[in-house]
Length: 285
Image 1 (spheres, rainbow, N blue to C red):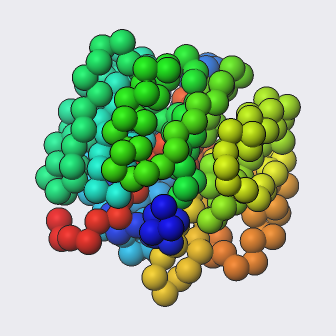
Image 2 (tube, one colour; image 1 turned 120 degrees about the vertical axis):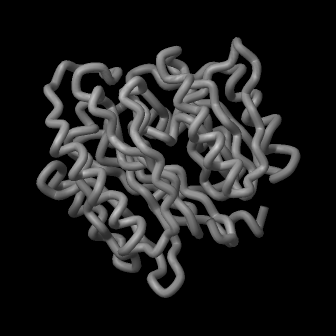
């Protein structure tokens, strides 16, 4: 456990996938906002550039598949911790073929692949790894069986606890929370978000600090990395979208802060963490 926490946020690789031309019209969504495809693709290019050039990660770029409009949201296709990759079974049946290309890429990278073969299981991007334990959101897209398989996959080998958290008013657990640093949870200010955090605190044997994010719960979805020669890095939503939330992130004086726009994919329920799988692997592609 101490070894896991010591390496928390240290990543060498990122897996991403292109924006499908079918995303604006066919991607799953909770609202009907119109998506600008060209702008979405530009935002994705900048996102990848940040991972590759600003942060120095080796980026594996999978091509978009127009038959899979949600395929850019690779986080829902696998949970990776250490050298283990659990290939999920996304909650929406239309998304289940997305895992095929992701599985192959992670296998080619040399990760140990575990498959979620139980056809009663569902697991999306409802997984928060804190460096000490997993929290799995139980939502319309993730069920108890999915959480049990995740626990079976990681608990024995990594000695990490796995707890479940009901998610009623959002798509995923990470729709309103994420890790902003070692032991630091960024959490939305809404009542459902704060209630979920309280449940997490009650379930855990560990103490976490919290960074409460105003504006909107979605602004609490950020990406934390610990990059050699750069230190603590946080990617967060741009101030043009969430000005008060950006001010809160600016309180993290020891962090390098990088605002990143996901304005268009957010219209189809995308978030910063959705578009990449971060991997710690000391090898060459």
